[in-house]
Image 1 (cartoon, rainbow, N blue to C red):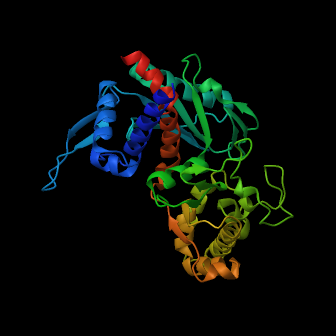
Image 2: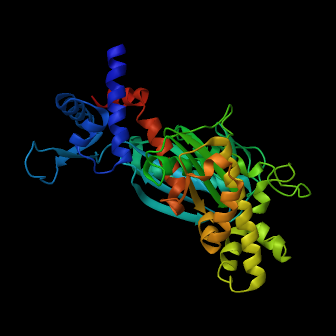
Image 3: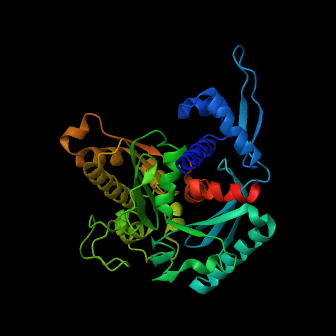
Length: 386
């Protein structure tokens, strides 16, 4: 039994490399995993027999033994990655190399939980009908606090506790749920700007700010899965009440709602779109001052998290990217001034995320692929494909 578990763990490790580096060669996998040539050949042959991978000759690199490129088998497993956002939802079918296929999106006709979940359920049922037994899991990124398959609170949607299991309905598919900012961080750590970092801090501004601390490619999710709610740290004005129930949340200082407050405008229905519009009007002095105030609040809060977590790198997504670009000098000054002295000589780099618009969807894909390429899942696939 131990030998079988080890066999499937090696297979899972190989598939993990395929997901992290689409188009990787068998020789490169062997180097990454420190496998002998014979072991790499044996495990990839088994994965090929199980309709998990295919091998095609790699382009010639001159002298040396020829190798092959590893790609998902056309009849191999897939997952359905989905992202639930304030105004719409998106989905993609994902094969074992992590590539997003058949991408779709649709705006909410209603923001009532039952209506939104019903729309997602129709998409899941359609994918199940198309892919059949190849579809092994549904992975959902949600803009809110999650525990298991329950959404505990989503202030941007105006939802409180919601059971998300209706998304998979009667399909029998497992539902994997994660916070959108957390999953964006996973995507950056696996294949983006934080790839290779042992400790990475990812932050994304949309409506409020969320994020995650990534340790060796996996998020520090906390005791109940609700870790990373950085937007609800008391970095803001204590006289302001947040929809989450707390006062003085950082959320209220760094997005379109904050910009509107600085300008004396009513709170926008779609804060992200409102902020994007203001960034086109930077030549107007009141707008420029509002942007600088928000950017300073963003940068000083990031420095506080650097002081707390000591990451190798910080990655930014969503509205944080154009905000920083609009007031880069203000960001640099506020970031530097808020760091502890010993960090200032060599502060962690703050990088724009690689995946940006697709980060949460790619992170959901990674969560789903981790599930279907686990030792247990591979053993079950083997039983049905031998």
